[in-house]
Amino acid sequence: MTALTISEAAARSGLSAHTLRYYERDGLMLASVDRAVSGHRRYTDRDLTWIEMITRLRATGMPIRDVRRYAALVRAGDGNEAERLELLMAHRERVEAQLAQVTSHLRAIDHKIGIYEGKLDQTA
Image 1 (cartoon, one colour):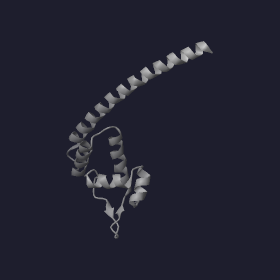
Image 2 (cartoon, rainbow, N blue to C red):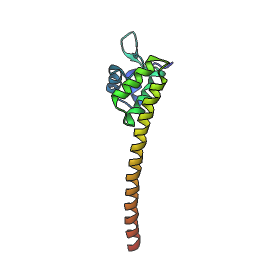
Image 3 (tube, rainbow, N blue to C red):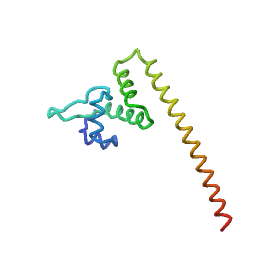
Image 4 (tube, helix red, strand yellow):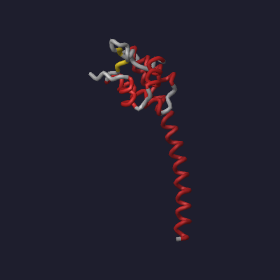
């Protein structure tokens, strides 16, 4: 089992040490991060896997309150899978709607690019 310092975990996750401390303080982690005898945080592979999940949820726009709720459900253990599924499905719907909107904007940009490329081809 890996035991990384906060700076090593930050480097591996692409997050800052401040963000990792915030995730722990705000109840987003599955469990308290282990501490060395010195009191310094020691991150495990399980912590890093969970941090990756949090990062993905946040990168797709899930609000902190929903991430916190999801973490609490996972911490609670078996028996609440329907609630977890509902939370993730609702988030997925929001992400799909955002993706559709961004795709529509991209099509409009591609259309404009085509117009300008056509004009430049005519002058060449």
